Length: 242
Image 1 (cartoon, rainbow, N blue to C red):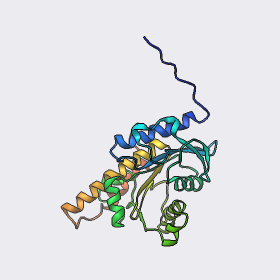
Image 2: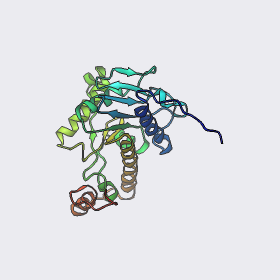
Image 3: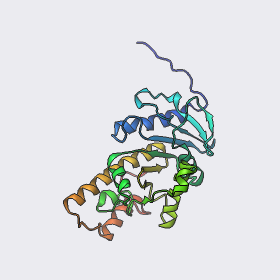
């Protein structure tokens, strides 16, 4: 049997591999078309993050193509231009120091809600299993923000809606940007991709619900909190534990 010996990983090899594998989940999960979207993964000990290079088709992407950035969105390692959304990722990592991965997609139903400029209402337990509030849609950026440092200001717009609504990024790991699309995050890059898939499915369910009954009320509070707390509360009992 032929033994294939892989070359040793470089300094950033493990981080690049993590980021690469997370990015490759996006087309598998039907969350992207062509080169839409990106995932990043952070190394907090080294104060850097890895992100997909801009405009590279997923079928041609390789782990060594992944670009290493610092929190000021400066290239640390990499020959390719990083994602055009890099400054948004950098600002989120710099401000929320407990997140480990970020995903941005243009998935159909999440984008449809974003283009409508509407929050995704919490109608059922699938939504409540992941967050106990409507998924917020941040308003469109001002002309000054768009014409200025657009990607950096996109991060500020996310912070703005979380501050205005007194939301916790630990409990609400997803957001819509009006006329743009979704961003999600989590403890790892893999979890941020999971949240992107959940967001897309919840967006689809909410859309279909309103097609069936436009007057559908939001889920009752007791059921909403029961489902959230049994997975995320201090006495959570969902799953197998540690």
